[in-house]
Length: 537
Image (cartoon, rainbow, N blue to C red; front, side):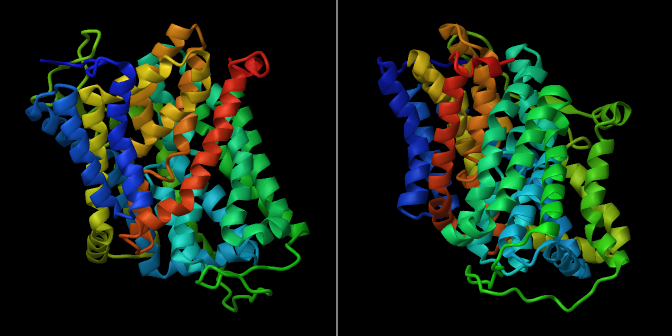
């Protein structure tokens, strides 16, 4: 039995700095030294293993076993989801209906900046709400490329866009994960998160315009950003507070897309910008001479409509119970761990294949075969090409998950959380930063809330603050790191055919990640004071 220790160095500050080294290594190797994501992930993993054994006293056997445990979890939580999401997209490409989909989105507006908002922000949020797991980054980036957007810019747009919806992604899974850890009403966490990320939602479309076309884009297309951001954020606020946090992003995505569609009927940018494939724009738009039939348009959208229906049906109580009836749960062999308080750490592995998000995406793809009229043989071959498409990105995802589990089970994450809690009232400002680090190493908001939610609640208890505020801040802060997580960078570059360019993509989005995080830090701090304390449930 290995027992974690909070302060192996004899000074909590030194111990926290020791635990911080693997995270800094990821950021430096990706952003500074321009390493590829899989090599940066492997290097950080090796560093964390050395620190776990030499610094935190974890036996080498259990340390390596913790890494394997993380890899095993990544298969169902990320790889299975991403493979099936991209497979659905590749099916539409094979059948020729993706071109129909491209033309349908083009018909919304002849301006590529407006198209970026509708696809990356609104449609991406719908995919995040239903599936998560990197699927919006993978699917929306290739949609933008099909419209002529430079591949690296397309990946950057979708990574930044996939922020505000992440707190409620996968039908609210990140928020749901906070319930068992805290023992508090989950709906309150949902309402609080909605009162944080709604402000970010109002900002993100403007960031997308700047990435797409600089200051010129902001000057000429700001009404689209304003309408999309405000309608999305307001819907998030209202639905999470008064209806259901699980439906929050679905409704927000639909409302924002509808609002932009209504706007472009009465307004268009004075000078339309058309993506040219090199990332630039031209002064005038050119139309697409092809006119698709209504039946073809319906077929093109059908795979995504099927996804909506399948995931919605899976939430109906009897169906959900049936899907979850066959669950294989067992303690991971060789991992016997206690936390610093002497309580056993849960190291059980849950294989819930039938109810898994990836499986529901697979079912959606199989149903799409009927509509797209693709044979089983072709579908299998397309699936093989889909897996091959990811290449080294698979290793990056496995390495990052192994890193997160080694850091968590050795006690490094707990030490960081305890050190931050020692900052007193200023912890309210730093609370989102904890979630940001969590998503940086896990790639998912669910993973961050599971790993660090307990630290947030412990800090709230120690400081006499609201656990609802800090728990939601962990989830809201985490979404800002989705765009810089090696896992999501790997998914983005794999989707656009630029595996190995993760470092360059990291540098494109890192500033936006930190900037939006600082905005949220200020907001959460004010929510911990009488200034905005009325927003806390």
